[in-house]
Image (cartoon, rainbow, N blue to C red; front, side):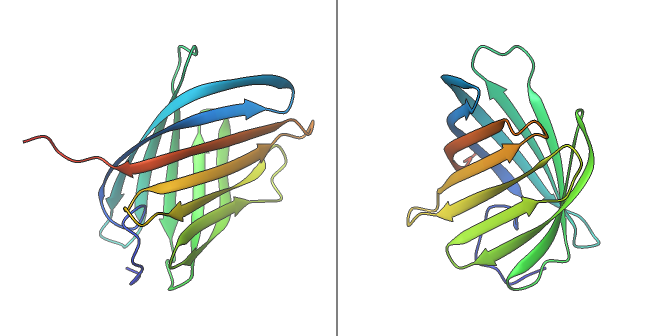
Length: 149
């Protein structure tokens, strides 16, 4: 495993977060809540399950990520959910940031940037676009979920 100093994504654990999502085709902003469950496998792959609950939307979105080939400043990432086949992307790591992008897919491309705060939380910004050029813009924050004893 990499010697990255980031706890998010690269260490097993649970993370929760919240934020807002907006769409280029609408002036509305919707609140969302997210939960990440992160596990490291024996072959040094990182499996992440992200559940997203959007206010006013009955069904949750579940994204599965697999992170592999983690180096000191880069990694490979795959995303899959019920709407997408497996999409491959590339990520970068620096001391204060984790980011990745998905490009050159027929129906999907975009990026996510996670900025480490001094308190260990992350703020993030993501943008995704569809072939018809509609954009989804996501801003929020995540933090490690602490276990209640």
